[in-house]
Length: 130
Length: 130
Image (cartoon, rainbow over all chains, first blue to last red; front, side, top):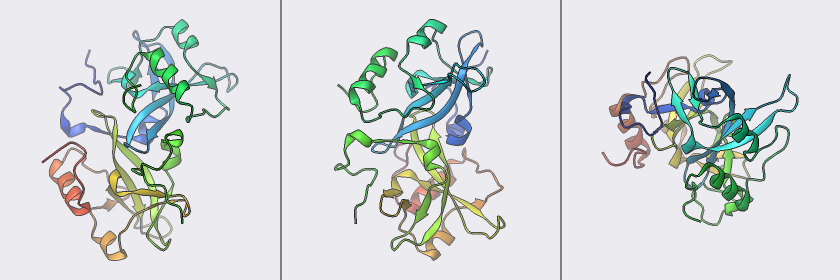
């Protein structure tokens, strides 16, 4: 199985760019291929120009009860075989992940909330140390 | 006139994130407010997770003759008063800028083409030195 991770040094530089509107709507699957949800949008840090989060849309039925979870970009890897981003979270882990009902807006200005997100996913924050 | 540049250190950290699907479709204007075009999409470097280009859609009439020009992200600044990204290029400069008919796909793998783009806009390349 060939995989293409965002940090894979084997990935040829010749295909190193991806369009934002292609990422939006891309499925997110866990190992084994079960779909967790889809990427709703990317959140970009205006200062550095780097992607901070992919907002994962998951759960719910017929548009009801859907949730949004910001996933630190570093935690997602693209899997060419699955045609999806791969996220190694169990059903239980995703249910405990920081999230909001789909209709609500995140308070992206709340740094303590952002720290909580990065602690949950155990990755360094996009804005440097804290 | 208040401006909000991507690198403005005065911009509070509390509003440092922007959604990819909000950037898509945002107008691009030159000084004085004249519209150059709109941002079609962002091109993201998979390796670093940083935005390499905003693809500017411009020119044409009734959907005919429209062109796409990749603008290095560092060259765009958001102007809150204009509700648009600001790009300091004259009509003549934008007509000479590296671009393609809207229907055609860029060969993002062609590094010499990317160097041409960065030389044109006189900004350092997103992949480091060349």
